Amino acid sequence: MFALLMRDLRLAVRAGGGFGLGLAFFLLVAVLVPLGVGPEGGVLARIAPGILWVGALLACLLSLDRIFALDFEDGSLDLLATSPMPLEGVVAVKSLAHWLVTGVPLVVVAPVLGVLLNLPVAGYGWLVVSLALGTPALSVIGAFGAALVVGVKRGGLLLSLLVLPLYVPTLIFGAEVVKRGAAGLAVGTPVLLLAGITLGAAALLPFASAAALRVNLR
Amino acid sequence: MSIWEYANPKKFMQTSGIVLPWVAALSGLCLVTGLVWGFFLTPDDFRQGSTVKIIYLHVPSAMMAINAWAMMLVTSLIWLVRRHHVSALAAKAAAPVGLTFTVIALVTGALWGQPMWGTWWAWDPRLTSFLILTLFYLGYIALWQAIEDPDTAADLTAVLCLVGSVFAGLSRYAVLFWNQGLHQGASLSLDKEENVADVFWVPLLVCIAGFVLLFLALVLVRTRTEIRTRRLMALMARERMA
Image (cartoon, rainbow over all chains, first blue to last red; front, side, top):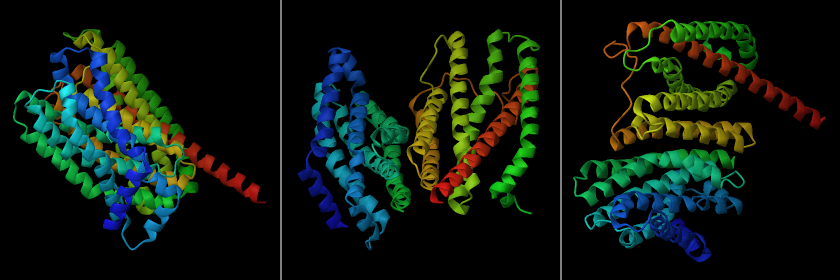
């Protein structure tokens, strides 16, 4: 399992394209919003939590179809499916690799973009916490979507349509954490709910993803 | 004699062929009675005036939008467990009908909300949940369309339906948590505590019965079409082989 994780990480870094793309997209969103909305600090501070979360979500969405598609095309997914490791484990490891490649950089870079969007100081800690708690769920849910459309040619747009409604709870609770944190309110409930969604998704969805992959490899 | 006999396409076609005209006729009867009664024979509400009458379209279609998804969930489970093709095809047939009901509920809601709340749309929990439900329907139908092999498509959409149901429930509570409501409470409930007044109650029940029968009739028609399409495809495949 560890070998698979290292392989996926190496591929992501060396193959180029996918690795920096999500970050660049996140940066673009943070730059474009003030240009579109206007540079008033008060307005930006109020919408910053939501914009940052939506940006992170879209950046994550951008790289989803790479989770299984490349391995499916060159046949290594068949090899992985017949290997002694259960397919559920393969899915979990690949989601983890996706999170390490796209989610973690987003978490790291988010505070810098918070400055651009004039996020209140109290919100920075909760921004990092909420993204760190929420982005794994985005990766796991995304892996499920990617497993569904792996056999479909040019499934990128379809993938977005399938995955977006599934992202709704994560987005709501994640943005709520930052919003409340920035306003100095108690954040316990949304943090726990967000963590609950991530843990529940990580525990159950790999089974659904593996089932979808088996159907597609049949 | 068990219910699984109807999973045999031949048996299903026979029975549904007999049942369908009755269901369709009964549905038309209920809808005409309920709607005419509701629109012309009930008094205007003392606060909402005549706009209240859109309730005869809004409430039944909203109910059926959710029930259609529930029916798809059940048929998807049956397909996954027992692999009866009619079940998968019924789920496929129900999706566009459910989507239509969802859109009707959203549109009539907007038409009703404009004079009552002064806005076409509000990010209220109930409204938002329905918008998300629309997205679920769209994704489900798109996945059916995207995959050529019918059995693969049936499997994948069934899995999507299961996962989607869980997340639809989650979204419902997430949205409740996110925003306070503008929408009124339930119009109907079994304990009659907060029901609409009696004059509106009976025609509304008739309308709901009409919508249920309409849904049943549409799903039967569409399932029969799907089965016939399958047979046609099988015949064409056989011809190509020969």
